[in-house]
Image (cartoon, rainbow, N blue to C red; front, side, top):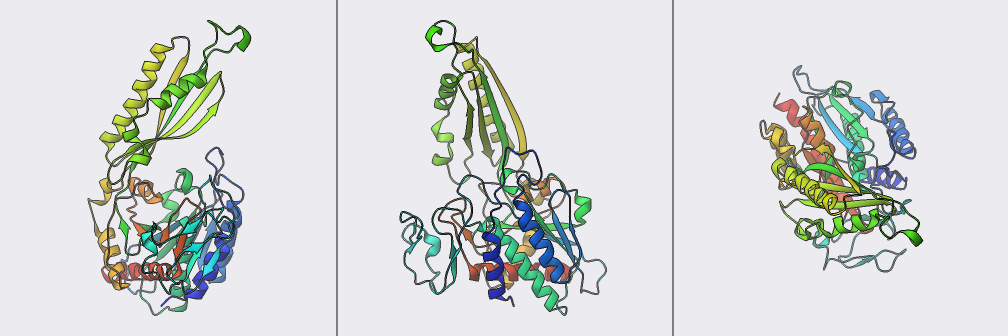
Length: 412
């Protein structure tokens, strides 16, 4: 069904572009470099003949694939993928295409310490003979989520070339800033005009997610008392030392390094400042809101205790809501999930469900009233220099997208 070489070339061209987002920026998109891919996708969608291709002032690429089904009551289905990649690792990926993978170790040339080894990466087992794409060892690949972008573009190309395939109206959305938790903030659902949506941002072939973390962000500000260090006795209050006490008080059993499955965590992500003032940024995560609130109370309790221990300092805590577990809304009507499972079967795979130890744009969209499960792309080892993806998995994901649009038309 899907032109795999066209999908591969698009994916490689996308990942070559540096589109890292920036959590400290106040603009949307948060970085100017995301606009390069945004404009490229606008051009490619127009070249494929889609109408209503639009780029909003905030960098959302919107387009419509017109309906081919004669039915008038087919829901408008939307497919989403984000153009940004995670900040933190080095930029400017050099994608490497490994055709007919031999099943052994893959040594990444720019860093000999970076090796994809089936002994430690079980997802590589069974990929012998497939085409794998990696980075070169010092950067992310960017399959999160440019694999999703390329998959959707492959499906769009298929629909354009095969008008005999019956489906309802399809809305495409490529968005910025998912990696910093702001991927849906600047788009009104009325601009999208969809009744159901799917993000292409999951990992394993056959996977469809309808449960994610609930998430908050905590900021702890510690203001000390400045003094010349030579005359500091009885005067200075060092904010850095108090920050160290705070971090030391974090329970290790609530750390990302020690949790898995359905256990939540508190993740100190960033520390900024000096002896006079320090700001700590932390991620709070739990699958249930009650557990999330417990972690927020714990952060506040530690700050209150340190405030008592250091009365001349000033400690404040601010907790900001990020997103909530999309299961709370999707379980009221599981049709979007059930259709995704059937589309996966039609693509020759066995559907699986897993709770995401993270969040997607679908978490926020679902909470806002647009049910949005998350579908696989085939990406693995994301947010690391060992990130990789199989071309064959991306092709099957594109087939799932095509089947999903057909299913909503069939069952309308």
